[in-house]
Length: 187
Ligand code: IMP
Ligand code: MG
Image 1: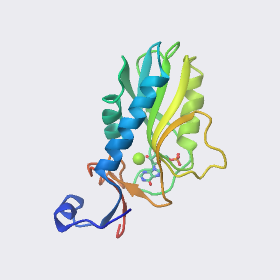
Image 2: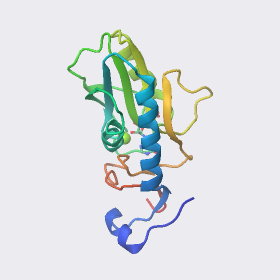
Image 3: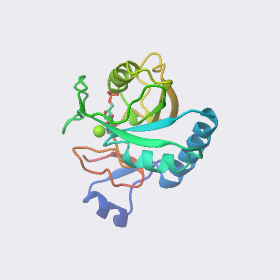
């Protein structure tokens, strides 16, 4: 279900119209479910939750508070789309976690899978470091690939074919702080 913002909420977007696609409540409920599933899935061993910055920062911080077992958190920074809306297809690591990955369960947390290139490159890069396991948890998946990435174990929501913003997702660095996920109607 989607709806337009009230004038009050529109203040936060700088007057732009964002149609709500996943509300705060829907996101919170799904994040709690994912946290419970992840808790069940890793009964033992070291778990390192690796968030891809910047898009995953809100999702990761909500998600780890729903995972009921010991874990560590670190981040990766990869080159982004810049101000564009289309993937450039190349991924460079600008920040690499300092912790060794060998022997640990790695849970890679992403905001959205579009073409899948970013996650495919990162999985290849991280798998070479001999983790005990490597899985992806993505909040959103546009489901454009003929087959889902083999490492994709958890998805929050299937995403519509639109450019989404909010809850960490940006357009040219705007809108990351919206507490819901929506699409730009007039952006
Ligand atoms: P992929 O490599 O084409 O799968 O693109 C994934 C990356 O592009 C994500 O990490 C996002 O940062 C960004 N991205 C893709 N689609 C969207 C969108 O609809 N809104 C905001 N960012 C997006
Ligand atoms: Mg981004």
